Length: 583
Image (cartoon, rainbow, N blue to C red; front, side, top):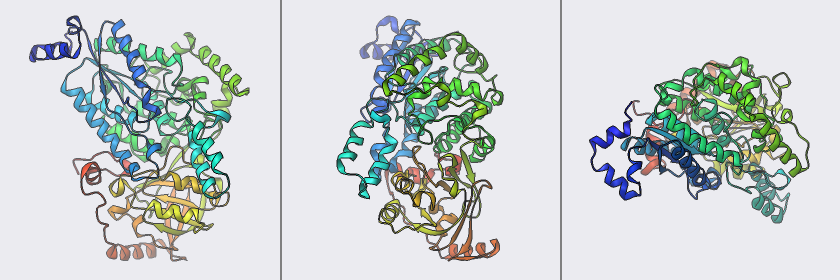
């Protein structure tokens, strides 16, 4: 077969001299051309080390007889943007990363690709871009950072900050946490959005088996990067190995079952539907809810569990999770190895993968003077932490299209409750009320006009942490928003409430004192009373009808630039908040 890159050389005579001017040797021009895309940059620890992995990929490509060309679309850091208007750009950045990858990958044809990313929007943006470019490709997840002293991890900073603002700890203790929470490169060391999306890349069959969420400092990750480069060259010569050939509805169902087993981030309900949309497959919150029901939750890793995320690899990573839920998976789906998922799992048992993981677990135990086993990290299927997955999609007259709760991180006291509404039209107003004890037990605190069209759908991280770290409020109130939450968020928090307020969704019509019903097991989220008085559904709907007539849309927050575009075109959060051009 003639490679696409060689066809391109015949069509564009300028191509060879331009590449020679870039530093290519003449003999490189006729080799399989491998598109190496990464989010490398100095923006944050999750991307700051990717240039090292890129060079390992290039070595693997060269060893297999190809030539690797480097492309970059640096991502931003949600953690560095928290508490500022910068976080409003976060979700929109996913679309821009995918757009630039689409441009780079299609402007000059390559024969295969390798994509490297670690974090919240970089990984889903790369996956979406990979789908659009649609050449045979391998994903290299960038790994997780090490834990700090006392197993300190970054998601605990919100708790330390809230305690400091309440006067419970001094500035010295807060400064200690700041200086020790990120001791290395890699994604934050908990099952947040970054970690979840690395795991999803492997669960979908797009990354090499066992490569997701390894410690970013591990020599094993360097070896995986080299192997990814070699595999990309092999894929360039194989038929029917494009991402669109590999990724199917069955692949997504496997990934969502893994998501349930790891208690993955709620942001996955934005990214997986958006990625599926790129493949022409429809996945919604209802798909997640269906697959999570009855699913066994196995991973005892923060924020819902006890251990830092580096232990995930030591316990066997995605393959170990898949072995535990094997009977529920589609084992015949194709993967980037050129083999089925079932074949990959069998190969790992034979090639020393699990023994290598055990060696690293022993070193972890020595470092922290612990004695944990693989089963302490990834529970056996029959000894699950929970048996109803980790995510629920609630619906009702408050959220006709749905709202999302991570019930594994929610106090049981809040699984079923009737609360008084306390609406706020921005996170800043709400956070101030929480920190200054203006919110009381029994309140349903609303933050609205923070959806994709409202302000870009930022995370309500500081407010959720202020609530969950408060011993009284954390078990007696709920936080409901059309925005979203960090993958590190815990507590009684409900996000993605759809339709969003800026579209006149019911969340925009809630008034002080309305009675709000939450029932996680029944999947209900309803307004059941007005100004403290219980009413029938018909009576509530009549009041909402009158309020809607009086409701006036807010002035557009962003009048130019990326967020203007995002506010005009973003789909519903329950569809993935991708740019929807054909409304």
